[in-house]
Image 1: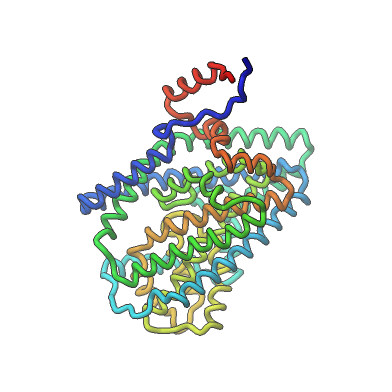
Image 2: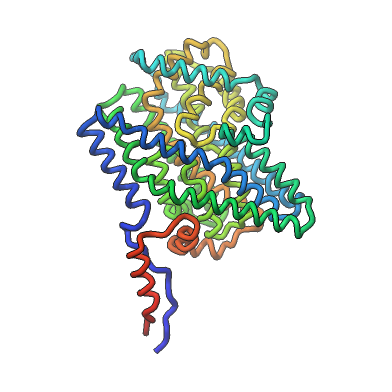
Length: 468
């Protein structure tokens, strides 16, 4: 008798997070349809989950970026990685903005609009426009002083300002990289320990993901299940279709060039995508992506640099939303924007799209800020308020599309840049894409085990030798 090579034990479906998220989504849909008024009151479950996730996003980004850069021990090599990442992000941003423009011109979802926003939508839109105005500080200088450069060391953590946290993390990492090797190793080890504590907090928070999915879907169905204006439904359809085209055609082509299959990548991160569907926030899965991509063969340095940076600089879904939403507002006002001005608007949005992290509603504020910064007769304060009021009712449904596209885009970016950098174990990636269960051990170690009964059953299975 010979002992067969043991393969990773299959997890029972009812012990996996995605299953309970699906249960939460299904129950939320039923509740929203059966009791729409009470269902609108459970939105706080999703909001509370996102609020808790926001608490740990800034520390996670800081720790992973510092460890990712400082562990390289070579600023020139780290700089090369950063330049490759930023170049990729810039190209992806331009492509996503362009595809959004093309979709808006081809399908014209706002043409023929005759409806009027409700009073409550106008009031809510006024707040979004006010937020957009505060975000618009005037061009490059305003972006640098108002969004990028920190005003204190702890302030960005308190306010959850991702871009400023990123700047502080890069400065800290550069400082640590210049230290003597023994001291640098101790500091990096200490920060990794802190990161493990934060991941422990995440383990606890993620138990609430199915409940958050229930609350988010119940509210969404109750709010919009009775039907909407034809143009708004068309806008949703065009947006989701454009995002799907971007993922399958654009990211699929990039993935094929890099030597892997986009559909297998999506299968690998299906748990994270289901969490996003329930919460409408890509930030809720940031720590899980860090662990999963490293376990799939990308180096810790690349993952630690690209994923957190991509959450501010590589927002493909948000870029599609910005140009598509802007032209929808123009079309809904029975106006047209010349191609030259459309290109100018897209170029402006290359800048304004940065920093619109994946929190629900951030895209709407960014859209308002972009339109105000562009100015002109088409985007007066009144026109922006009316346009935002038209979109605000369906923004949550579109927010899910933004978050899903942003997440997939950043996963593909990490794997592509890791290969470009020569820091991707392609054999390991191929094995993981063929059998995603290979990352289960790493995911359980960092993000929690399943129920004890399943663990005991698997332990018993491992103790019984297989024979041939």
